[in-house]
Image (cartoon, rainbow over all chains, first blue to last red; front, side, top):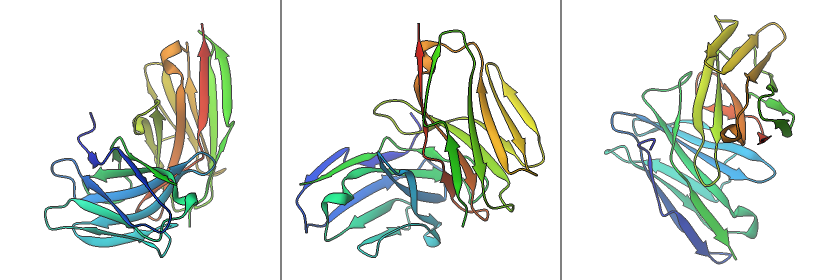
Length: 113
Length: 111
């Protein structure tokens, strides 16, 4: 167990809908990262937060947004969902930021029908 | 930004053989190079990492080598066992922020 908690484990929804994925980092970790994993693209970095502030952005679509709350948990919001958004979404956390190991949760499997 | 290429995409070996996975990266400013193992239905888990001031690091049957000049690093697994079967990802840090991952190598070890 990595200590990173993601909910829900599975999510099935329809095109055009909006969903929220939740992540609780390991105790003491200040950074949260979101990654999208699809079969042909591997692990794609979406966005990073450190102590409540956005620190780095990757290939995150404008329809997607995230935030990190004062208690350090994070939410990833996906809106106007398309079939191609179906993927496994991982949250990871680290103590600080940059050049250090990430601890991954077990992911949220999103299926858009 | 950083780009990481990983080869091969699939690798099949016999139990007891060695396995080698290679990665190249694009950003010469990257300093941290971890390797992750992902088993079915689980999140990636760190197995070994190396920093730019070191050329090689070993942990039991696993070793990683780094060539900063050529911007490539490799994972070596010796005496492979069936439980080594998984997807392996290499990664490099991007400007000291997030990790950028390769597309993964599916390793199959047959007994």
